Image (tube, rainbow, N blue to C red; front, side, top):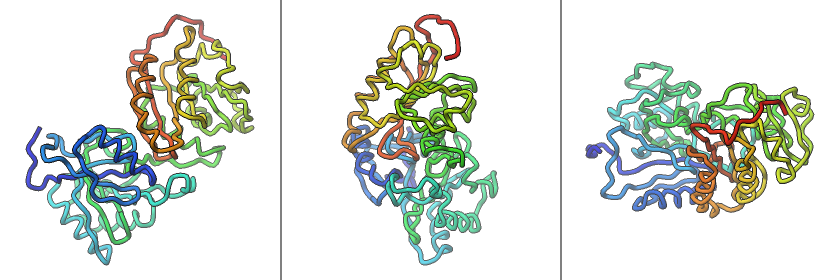
Length: 376
């Protein structure tokens, strides 16, 4: 561990969903005792480090908590009457920090349930666009990537050092700093550039596509999935769009566009009423049921632990009826690990609402027994 230099900040910043601030504060206090919340706005927080904290030798190498969309070293905010004044103060605050990319985005201002599905991404709002254009025009020293260093849809490379400009208000910007260590941190605000296609039958398409990009599961086209609680079919569509075979299990009706897809099969049953033999050739399982987490975990556990079922990986959307349920997360993860999944990731996705996503994988994959491969 290196000793902090004279310009090393004693604060971290984090962005999150509006409404998730206290869950993030509680999570940070549980994992990193001694840190104190400092500056706070809806969707944006900073934390002050304890006196004995030392930053790592790799600047800004901080892994993201579950309820943080993005996180990094915090160098403070600047205020100004004009864009040019803001940019000059921001670049002056950045000083001689080395960087490869500049990420600019606006903090969240509304809870996710009030955000329209076609709302611009945080990096594409009008305030974010004007801030980015001004910083790009006034940049005192371009990195090796040149003007492309400001492109919000061009992913940063792993290991890149990134300057973060978070637009707090129209006349208030914040300077953050991170190194790219996780897939979502390659994009401004930790948000993948995903847009709802016209053919999608529900916003679950967005959640599933984001979960697939974030989880980085080793999935090939032609893989066989089962989805518990599949109606009306948005998440199944995201899998079908990637060339998967999908078994949708739900007593409710599926959208005709999904039902008629040649790689989709619908079982109009509850998961508890579904014979386990239908999962024999399934290797991946998705659950996005609108039920309490314990119900979801019980339903999934009864499938993945069955002697004739060999599920390699699961993606679970766990609904939180109240934010205080987040304190149960360590127990839920322990339960999932007991099923034989030795790798897992957990995060509140940008397209999640009051829920979290758990992606768990068995590596190396070991089947309980050899079974004949066949189509369902």
